[in-house]
Length: 418
Image: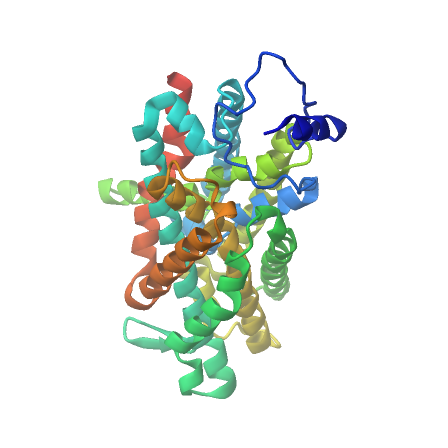
């Protein structure tokens, strides 16, 4: 930093909404490595862009498992748990923001490092790697299932492209995922600022709303025809096994709201960082509304036949006019939604792997070679995992019960107690 750059900083508003002040006794070189360096030409992200980016981080594949939580818990406890988890998530993020400002940390990892030392920071980075790689592998597997088909218990479920054009080499699972990776994931993952994804995030949220609107419309149509049975309002608990089974919904609910690893990145790029709390509240309100409506109408539509992945229920005859078309609309919109969510989850994954491997290096955005190598390596690992891991929901529950719960609740509570 030079005297000239300090003078320029005084003339314009910074992203932290603070006025640069020249102190004669302050050092010319910063005493702390700034993790958001490299964005000096960036004027700041808008409020709406931040809301869309955080909402896209939250709404992922977990939304498809939420109707199954209604089947396990019953309608009333299920909806209550979704709302409760939204408030719990807001509280944990508030703790992160409060203590990050107290310790002047610009990232979640920086806060863990200031609180627990380098090993605390490394533990968080490892948890984010496990969580985000697992989630992105699940996303890619589901995209392959939707577009090219899958087999479950010996039954083949045709993919959208297979249903439209028949079975060909170019709509096989491997080729579809390869084209998707090279044509969509790689270009979006090459963007260096998370705010650059605000338009794809807005489109992603819109696609989630399309899925919701179609589901609500089908359910209302069948309600008017009297073809929907009364759903269970409370869980069926008749022995210790059925009671313990209720806890299997916890990893799904935890995973559904995990967005903590992106909060600091979004805050650092905000034009006015004091808006971050409003961004968090708006995003959680939007996402919890989508979650409640999806869970309610998905469970009303399929009842006790609701599968762990409600998308699989749309592979059958819905018994309504244009049912086949609506099935395709639901599946295609969901696959497109996951494609656009991918780069938002990939962004903190890349940053944390770089911080784990090169903790003392200059910012990743300033080193194009390191940026390209880390991005390419991670995408290759996720692509291979999606082609060789057979079960997605076991992986989902594993990440939700381990890394996700640490990122979302254990680490913020530990920082507070410390």
